[in-house]
Length: 353
Image (cartoon, rainbow, N blue to C red; front, top):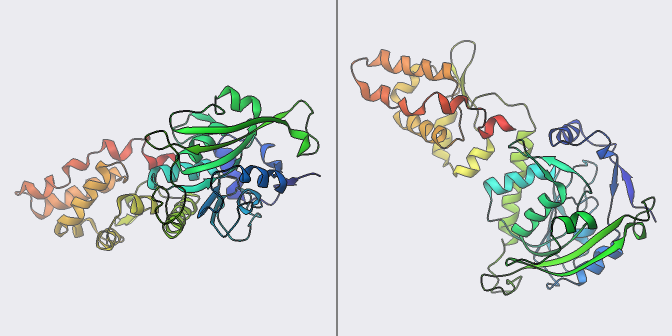
């Protein structure tokens, strides 16, 4: 039985994500979906039978999610826009981009179970320009953001990266090499997959609580769903073309603003703060002379690296402040700490996406 399908229905945005993360043009032609029998076999080995939440970073048609008994909340990432498994909260994007957004905005998000069938032999480009093995990137994410699960990957890669060995934090309690052609047609007889099951350890080396009324070691389904919606909105926004700076001048010399979802969620900006920044849209630089609280908020956003100010806009604001009160230095100094250098450094997050 073959479980290979085409990715010919990918959107242009998804295909661009393949290029952005270092994929070559032939990488996206085929998908190898996990047979239901293998998914159920490995799920039965996990220490939790009825998880409240379950996650798959490359979910395809949902076999690694639907193998869980009961009615867990299901979360997945899938590059192919044509794959929409029923009952799964899917983010259609490159999974590495989602990994990075979760790490940045929601580092404490944790699912009960995370199962993965990792793309073989890929290297993905990270935001900092470095590359990482697809198996290692997936393994790090699922073990940081779930309590237990199973993983299917290239056996040689798993063993080279020592993923099959237990650590102080992760107990790999089952590992086995198997011939890949047992599950997927057309693969070389010598190609072997590694299948493993793992669970987290607590601070004392014991298993973490997975479910039940006293469970505190995972994100409840309601909170996980809210976070997942936020992550999806960040990913969708960052697929679009964005201005080079968060605050800049238009051709007529008026201020324009761009407030990203990432900044809003990460800084937990209040509606009042968001309103202050939006009021800058279409405002003349002179309008900031009476908005000290807004200027202070701008300083905070730029100083923490989440906001960029166009040098021309900064100059226009400072000129306006000086023109209004040239003999009073306090107003001019209120923007002094914004500085030119943070606004134009290419390593800021805003330039990396």
